[in-house]
Image (tube, rainbow, N blue to C red; front, top):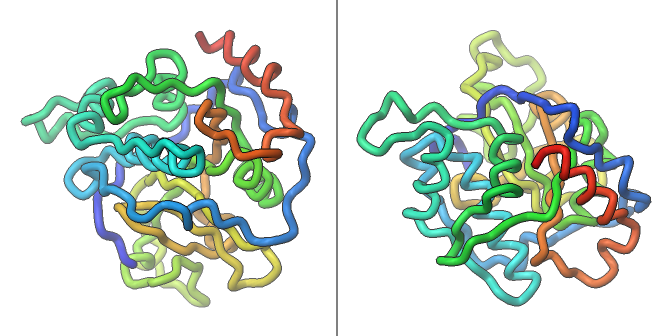
Length: 251
């Protein structure tokens, strides 16, 4: 897969009140592969081929996967994606307003106001951040919470790559940034070698990226405490009450 759609993640604007996952999760990184995304038959584009709404597409993909695992899939319609994106300045018919959004702003809006998904108002209970360089933390977050909402900067070289990876001798043109993008991690292999990968959802499809690529291009990572995520045992090492109490500062 190459670049098949629009970008739209604005630079991270970290709020110091957002809790760190490591302060609330006692679980350790799993030793085997994680394959939550395999349960989903197909992923919607969520307008991200035409609009820079990747941050809202990430919401749509997360909700879809949580529902599939929990037994009640709901898909965010294009109209609902557009309505969500309008909160962040987009005005239909005005291309200049299609400027993207900040990930933490989108997650805060999902927490406080909710997004309409499949005709139903949907809210999360909490969210927390992971340091991008904390590979074990990303694995743990994926294992415990089912997905990790990621922010990356795409370099030009990914245009021609089936698996996103850092080339051995990239030119200056290869390294030129295309822009910020939001993707949702739903699968991962343990980082045991240079070919070990995360699998993310982007532009209506699964995309493999090496862990080395994530370390080079990843800028932010967040886990989401969603009421649909009821996988038995996955949340046993999580102080959910503490995470949710920390959210009161954001409200």
